[in-house]
Length: 636
Image (cartoon, rainbow, N blue to C red; front, top):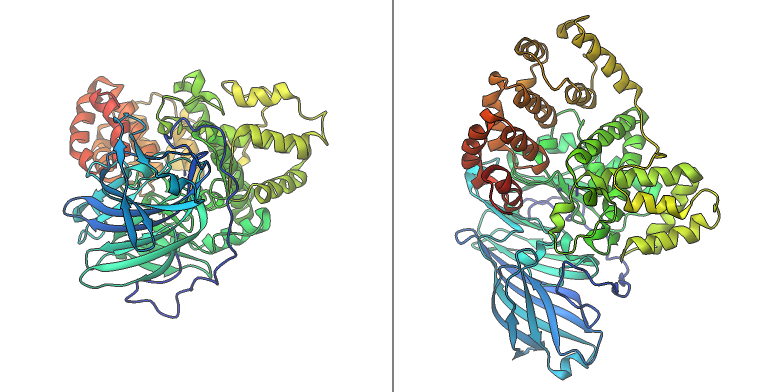
């Protein structure tokens, strides 16, 4: 995340221009389950492990619920196991059965008391014959609730087309349990088939190969995921959607009014995919498509295999924000292929992915672009360091008893990336690239923790270069706040020129209108705005706005940075745009700092509360959980 599907169009309009799925790949066998307990799951996969799920889901927009049936094929790891424990959150469990052929045997079950973070353990009593026969199938009939944390239901007026409702899931980190009863831990990987029934006129997409779909009185779409994935990558969306191809293995789904712009903006996706394969080995998920979600999506992107979910806020018209696509694509290797075994090890997903993302950006767009991305990433990391507790500046934090969503800062991303750059600096880029490619091959379709990564690193790199890597240095990167003194920090000549021009303006040597900015990229504009003095006069704010029209910027990232400056300086001409921005966008990384900045001022508190009351109903439950404590002062 930074915050899938086949190349068929909607079933009623698919033509030969759509790229079909390739032949079924060889079966992928997941490695034995990880043995260290996951503090964010009730499941005991050492006793019984879910290997496959057959899901049937009826999408009820009127009730804002999914009516589901999950047939879970379970492997008994312990023939003496007396129960199967699954993770749930706010699910209404109807009945549970042991399925053998066409017969069903009711099973006793109970839901434990609800924990505010983990939800409720679903404990299913197993007859001895089930645990003793190797594999067995448990059927669970259930309904979600309207308040499910992993689902967002949007009324038509909150979509781009404003004609039909929209629903989408967000399963990371532990929200899959709010719409499917399963072992909701990244230690367990499973395959699945899906059957989704939708109201007429709507299309379902999942992070899986699409078997068929059509429009009728009650449309039904079926899917198949042949590669085993962890639960946080389960994904479903339903809405008025169209497909446009980008390349042989890539394409974009979006609402009709957005799809053409998205196809143009993300035209480099196929080139990114080919560049990635040259760097990291074969792409193992057959297709890589994008789904552009409504603006309320709380993240930049979500790397669901085969179908990344993407915020529309990266459609800037000039491809300047497409590093996000490189990031989500890179997850096809780091995260989706080789997965962190628990959220304590999230840097293994995100730090590796930022490293791969920047390599892809350099290959497709050049080193100048990569250097700017690196510097801006470091600036974001340093800004987070100013507000984080020491425990949250570690690459390996202890999140037991905490919501793993709280670990989503720039630390696992940018500090993890700088750790890998430091390792690379010790052995050279060519040798490190060989190591990474071997790492992805060695642990493909497996979940690993930091200790396993270090053991592999010591065997493959440290043993051959003992003078380069001291254990205290490695421990310092992982277990010490901040950045080590010998971190390899990025620099950008282009951004240094931006600094010089900004300084000339600040000193009154040049007016804003006379600055040479015609060829600036989004990255240069962000660097210019983000490094303005904290306090500016009303005349300075007005001069910048006249020269560069920041308040009216169509680029969501540039608007975000300018609105933070406007809040600090109580620049009233920007307040209508600030209100429209907060109401129209639900991406947490963009709106959370704005609310925090407002609440830090005397005048801004009333403004923030008024706008939040207006916007809250259109925000995702995850965004609401983050923002309520900030704006309303309530407990998360």
